[in-house]
Image 1 (tube, rainbow, N blue to C red):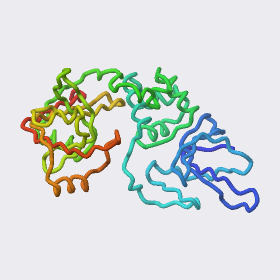
Image 2 (image 1 turned 90 degrees about the vertical axis):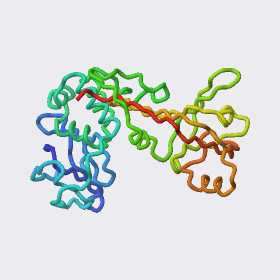
Image 3 (image 1 turned 135 degrees about the horizontal axis):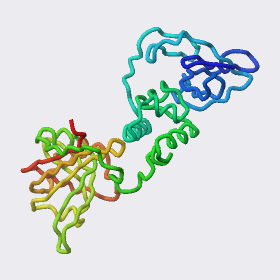
Image 4 (image 1 turned 45 degrees about the vertical axis):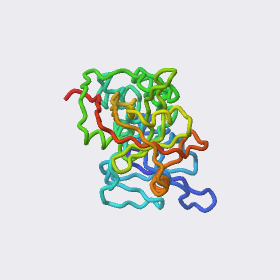
Length: 298
């Protein structure tokens, strides 16, 4: 059996001879086109390493450019460009970052990993599921570990990766800060207590330009009521070594009006992750809103 990139691998039912499953061959492991192959299955869009058995055969294609072929589960072709925009997954982003850090072109990295350059491009630009064997070869070619490409260490504090070679620290405008706070998420409340300053993570909502969160009466976060406090939210992109942070400062007040509390509960995107009875709504109306982000130098 020999194949080229873009060919269709068809697996037939041993009893009826009809197509049981098919997928596009997106990666070759031998220059002569012999198995195994990396196959993107048409029913799941997942890519797996396949050693074809006697019930499989290759259906040769016309080798159209990537993005012009959509293979249906029946093996027919739709000659229209795929409307799906590029959507790199975390693995692809980490692979692309490590490749660029090593100063390798896509062709060089693919040659070292013994995979097709077209498949490496697909992996970096789409949300793919490479096989363990492919990940091992990629990690070896890029001088890293499979665990790093898979995002190992997600339970550790963020930001343990290497810094950008030429980072730029930019100030965010108030509108950019509001955009990054968006409508909800997880942030941190900084309050002063008799035992010293405390920083507490909270699920927050942004409603009518106010930052609101739920907590329990008597909690450390509830001690913020009646004082000016700091609220911080951030995001760290480990794959690209970029990130941003936003700091809001303003007075914290409890929401006690029943209709207002009901509206907040109805508009909340999630219950507090910490669980328990947390029915005390606290509202912060920022008097100062600042932020910064780290991006590559232009």
